[in-house]
Image 1 (tube, rainbow, N blue to C red):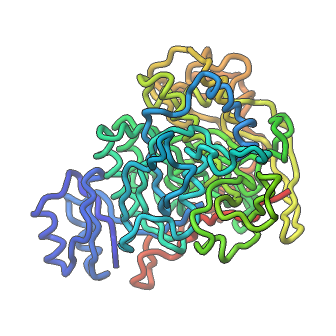
Image 2: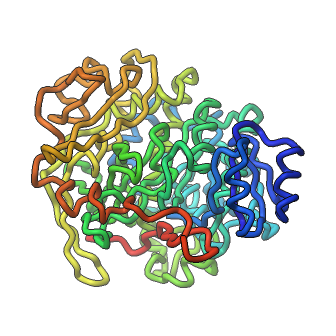
Length: 533
């Protein structure tokens, strides 16, 4: 089996020899996380796990990938009026690849995809799935293909002049592995100074199987964060999943479960440019996270029925999901009604994530000195926070009705507001790690814990319209916002809740006890392609 072995320090030839002596072989060096990808006999796992130099062993898990009104909903025009378009900022898109497209060219006609590398072994970094191109367009599309005298809408991304670094980790079926993503993150860090890579976009994920402190995928995103790169990650599309009796709570996928990164949930723009009527996507995954109970997502952005770039009409998604295709009259009144060969629509937190990545690029163009923690704190502090108590959505395919509640595990800090973020000058030093929810089974209530060094522990930064409203924040023994807990006895942590013995992170072990299989189950997050009302 293929496993990622994390050592207590960067492995040398001596460590690789130990694995070979157990019948294994090194297939990829993962130095940033002090690890290597090895192919080893299952019978060797116990011996390797007992090696005092080995910190953790995990399977090389599989994972999957998860605009016209989106820009208005998050006030992107405020940045464009300030001549902010992402110029000079590099955004690494770690996804299914990026193909040539007129909307990704600069004013001279040259491609803004300045670097491409394939990690899938297919020999091409082009998008054969249909996901990475769409994501790239939301970040960086300049609307060239929808700019004409008869065009009724310009399908432009958030930061239409950023440079793109294309790191392909998902194949034509949208599948990849931990080791491929880790290797791509490692390469983004190595290339950061060459292409001024300040943002990594990860519109992908898979299940949470251990603490983020042990998960090699999470350790990789933390390495990028510490290297000065803002990492933006999809929350996942499992918000409708009630298989564990949790009504979609506890379904945020890795590496979106890591407290360092900016984890993004999806909103619906409701077909208008006015954000006041926007609602949460019922499929958007909700916190708290598995194992560690981190409060996620951090922020929301539009992600439903988003129009963006189509790499090739023969790619997997447009071929298998023809409902994603749109006529050329969608943006050109002089069109003949035939299928557009340059744009199509997808839905999911995968689409919301690049909206935030583009916003980060605009912030960093305005103020290049911002650290990842300062960017995250600014986005969360200035997020739009006016929501209904609940809303309902209807699945277009099945007619099923889903009810969403606007609590902190559903909306996080609120809805991205680029204009407010650009205008914010509040000083901040420290970390912006997402807080942790702590459950008290005696009282059947919970509190939210913030370390004193975290931005959420400073009440003055959030004022009376705090991102957490009436929630309790506990810093050590000091309660910062009153005595009311996050939720009461009718909360998500009732007897069948995410915290109970039947929860997503109950007693199931990482390794099956009755087989040589590396894990008992692996449910990768999927991409939403149809959307919802």
